[in-house]
Each structure stands twice: as C-alpha cells, then as structure tokens.
Length: 349
Image (cartoon, rainbow, N blue to C red; front, side, top):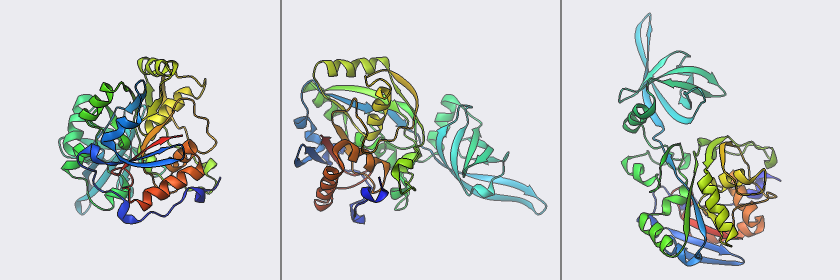
C-alpha cells in the first residue's frame, strides 16, 4: 500500500486559518451510501436518528507553546538565548517531553526561565526532543501554563499566522474537561451548547471519552509503504460508564458515531482485543488504514484531512479508497474549507 494512493491536489486557499463563526455555521458534507449532500453543521440532527449516540472527546488543549530565556555565565560575561518550547506529552516521571528550538543552545542541566514564575531544567536530550522538569506541578503548573503559554496551533496554521487570544476560545471545544492535549479534537470544535441541547431533544445520546491528542497527529508519513509507519502513542480512557452507554446503544439498535478521528481511534482501541465495547485506559498507538476491521463505529463526523496523512488513511479505511477520493474531489470542487479550522463531513458507510 503506497503513500501516493492517499495524495490529492488541494488549492492553498482552501486551508482555513480561522474557524467559522458561529461554530455551527460551518459547512457539513454528508456522504451516505452513494449520495453526497451539502449541508450545514447546525442541521446535523437531520441526519441522526433517535437512539443514535455521539461519542465526544472531552480532552482539553493546554497552551503548550512557551517562549523563555536561557542564561549562561561565561568568561566574557553572561549570555542569553531565546528558547521556544512546544510541550508534547507528560512522561511517567512527571517531566514533559518537548520540542525545543534551538535545542543545540540548551545543555543538559540548564534552566529555561518562562513568564509567570515558571521554569524548567533540561533533564535529557533524545531523538531531537528534550525532557523538561518544571519547577511547578499540579494546579500551580496549570495556572502558570495558562498565563505563560500560547495555544499550539497546527503547523499549517502557525506557518501563516501566530496564535492569539482568540485561539484560546476557538481551539477549544465547549465541553473540554480533562487537560492534557496539545492538539484539539477538531471535529468537535463545530459544536456549541445549543446544538448539543437540540440533539438531545431529538433523542440523540451523548457519551464522553478522553484521548489526549499529541503533536504526533501532525507528523508526516515518511515511508512509501504506509504499513511500515509507526504512530506516536497517546493516552486515553473509555470509562466503565461510557462503555456501558455504547453497549446499550448497540443493543437497542442505535448507531455509535464518534465525533473526530481521535474518538474513533480510542473506541476502536478499546474493542481491538475482544471486538466488543469495553472499558479501557492506557496509551494507544493504533494505526488505521485500509483493511482495518471496525468493531464499534457506525458513522464518523470529521473534518477534511491533509493529503498523505494517517488521518486520510483512516477515512479511506472507513469509507473505501475510491469512495473517499470521490468525496474529497467533491469537497475541493465545492470549496469546502480544510483542516483543523475547516468544515466538517459526516461519513456514513
């Protein structure tokens, strides 16, 4: 299975750098069977049935981009270096793995000072990343990070503009609860409280799961044979209550519809061993590409993804490669907005 099979031409002007406002005014492409229908997210309920269950990822994006200063004493006096840090994921030891630029200007054991009383010592370097031990933890760390950090916008947005105060709201779901993600579950950015309430009124059920999305979601696939690609692990949890809710929906004949590839990857991880819907907690590196057997998801709401990306492979696995090519050709022709701040699709095999 070759990487080129997941490529397509995307005009640059279709890459969204700001979301639709209000959130529910984003466009919604509905692909059901052989049909493709152009709609709007606020009308999502038209395509759902009473007894269906949406599965939402309630992770909360942390302001993971930090800019600090390294000071070093030398024979000629003290020198300073500007250090940029992007937190990637917490390590079991309580430290954080991070991208550090420029990594070569920071030695193991040196301290970087950030605003809001936050500082970190470089504990080690490995594979182009650093392990940072911060001076604060728990609620104090979260408070300092909120004050000192910026939202970690995806590379294709960050290359066009810097994160600003508006991204604090835009790049966070309205139901975000569990801090730990360094990228948003972007399909869920289209929901507001009114839409969720309206769906519940129509008999659509809601279940929350947690997957802390890592920066690895944006890493390019560098192997020509995609089956050789290895995913970065991300921490997630399907609680006993969430598993029971999904099992009840399945038993009653309702559909289970994850919102976003993160929610789908998590619930399919939980079902991978037994094929059944079960509680699960841990790190998942599940890689979904054509040939994968889906055990839980009956439909998928998701944004439009990067060419040659693992997420493009996932939707191709879900809908079929020929079908997803037709869907994406329609989306480009109709000028849907792509990627994290772009429009949405509802994919119903």
